[in-house]
Each structure stands twice: as structure tokens, then as C-alpha cells.
Image (cartoon, rainbow, N blue to C red; front, top):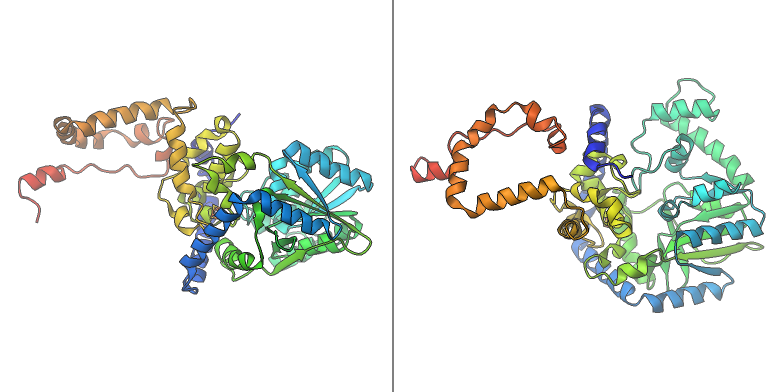
Length: 457
Ligand code: SF4
């Protein structure tokens, strides 16, 4: 059962220090993004171009998929087509079983979160080890990512240090120095890389013309995951394709600048075939994506390159954190993806938006996630998910604004609301969004009244 976003946010907001840190961290990433964008005079043209490339690719997806698969197969890569999450999980398990794999290292992949692959494999006796540092921390803490690019940013180094001590990864009690902790993690992961018989990576971009799998990381863990074990499995969504290297260059310039405020990721690796003596498999997943192509209002979500910029800028995400949303991808794009997956289960997330549309402005692929949330809100009534209280309030507001005499009378009496205790207006389930906000004070005289009496200077 889903938890109302606003109520979950209410709980999270109780820890003011954590929320403030979260807010400031992501705002600083947003500022870095702005600085990077300001260094490129052609920034807006790049965004436009990226959007056009995605639109072209998505509307010619069948052709590009065929070209991509043919190129991979010509070099001996085995290509699989999964229609949904269950099929993908079975396929990956089948490959691992054939190779008698007992341990698999894995670089970050939100697609495997979408499919619940880790749990599926672990239940079948395969030791799955996340190798992205943030993901590994979350895995050891039994938590899920709270952001698509910086999954464990909400966890402090003291918390990481204590957990490393408990797991025997750190031998020095009370040493929470980031360099020391990173060294411990590095040492711990090195063992895992050496022991694993298979490595799984996601895919940031698939280049149709050349059949390249392009993976961008800052830690080089995708490269370690694929250069130690002989078996490499790639899982990717159909929408990850770009036509050629020229298109890839456009996204390369945008992805990291928008995501973390860096000019590029530290490692951009191209995988084209198996290592000598090894085997490479690519599993392409649909899982509802081909239905989204045909959705006139929401097909643009397929243009998303998962940079996370819409989360970093979103005032609701920054203050309520990734843990408040019901879908595994939070923030503006997550609200949309959740609704596309299961509108009944995730409809409450659409209220987690101020409609400031800052996300539309920063998105490198012009997905316009905020504008799409606005469309979702309009469809809530049709799916039986419109909030009764909000409906009642909207009807009241409609009456008020369509009758000038009623509006003027209401304005006269509005200052009386100043005497209602804040406890009643802000600290009840009637108005969970009021929590943490000061009650606005109504002016004694309205603008209309002052205007009419010539009191405005
Ligand atoms: S919707 Fe845009 S800003 Fe948000 S993650 Fe996707 S590409 Fe980035």
C-alpha cells in the first residue's frame, strides 16, 4: 500500500538538520549545473538538439534497434529481448546458471532496480555485489537509492563509518575520514571483483550505428566489473539508443554537466564485444516502453537520460527527500514514471509538485516533467483518484472567483482568519503541506478597497 507523499514528508521533516543538509547539498549541485551551462554559449541549442535527436530516435525505434542488434551480433555479442521485468530476470538468471555463476559484481543500473533483479538473483543463491560506492553502502544498509545519480548522498560519513565497522570493512573504530573510508571500500570491493565470475552493467547510451554500449561512471567500477570476470551482461531499456557518435557527443556534453556539474564523467567506457575467451550478453528491455511511445501526452518521458537535474532543482524533492515518494525513482521524472507504471498506486505523488516548472527549465532533453505532472493532475478525476477535500476546496474557490460580490465580501472578512490558531490550520491532516510554513497574514484592507479609496501611492 502506498503512503501519502505529504505524510511521509511530514515524518522526514521532523529531522530538520538532515533535511537542511539534503536541501543544501542538492541546491549546490544545481548551482554547479548552472555554472557549467553558463560556460557554453550554445547551451540552449544543445538542449534543443538533444530533444530532437531523442524524438527522431524514438519515432524510428524499430529501425535503430535492428541496426544496433545486428552490429552487436556481428561481433559475437548475444542479444536478448525481454518484454517485461520477469522475462529480464529469468534471462539474466538463465545466463548465470548456464555459466555456474555464484557471485556477480554489478555497476549501477536503475533498470535492475525497476525489475527487482538483485532480490530475484539473491533468492536463487547468487551473491550480487553492488560496486558503485553509494550503491554498495545502501546494499549493506539494506536501503534503496534516494537519488538516481547520487544514491546514498543522504547518508552521513559517520553512519557509513559505523556500518563499515559493524561489517568488518573498517578496522579503525571512530575513523570517519572520507579518504580512509573510501580506501576501506576500495579494498573490500577489490576482493569481490577478484572472486566474481560475472559482471553486470547498465547502459547510458547504445549507439545504433556502431553497436557500442556506453557506460559513464566516476569510479571506474563498470570497467572493473567487466575486466575481471569473463562474462559480461548488459541490461538496458529500449529508449537508451542514439543513432551515432555525433548524437552521442551532444548527450555527453549535457549528461554530466546537468547531473553533477562536472564537464564529463571520469570514465566513459565503450563496450563492443566480449573479452578474449569471454562472453557478452545484451538484454534489451521493453517493460511498457513501447506503450509509452504511443502516449501523446507522456511519450516524452522516453527522452529522459536519467541525469537527475530535475530532482536537484525540485523544491519538493530537496525538502522531502527521495524516501517520501512511493515510486523507486523520486522527483519530477519519478512522479511521471510512477504514473506510467501504475497510476492507482502512485497517484499521490503528483501532489508533490509546486508546478514551479524549474525542472522543465533545467532538463537537458526537454522532457518537461513538470508540465507532464500538470497533465496527470487533470486526469486524476477520470481514474477515481482525485482528492475529495481538494475537489471541495476547488469548487468553493470556483464559486468565489466567479462572483465579484461574493469575492469582495469574503475579502472583507478574510482578516478574521488571522485569529484562527496556527495549530488548527497547520498541524492537522487537513493541511499537511502547511507544516513547516508560517501562516500568511491577511492584510486589514484589500488592494481593491485601497485602490477604490485612492489610498495607493
Ligand atoms: S527528466 Fe530531464 S532532468 Fe529529469 S532526469 Fe530525465 S533528463 Fe534529467
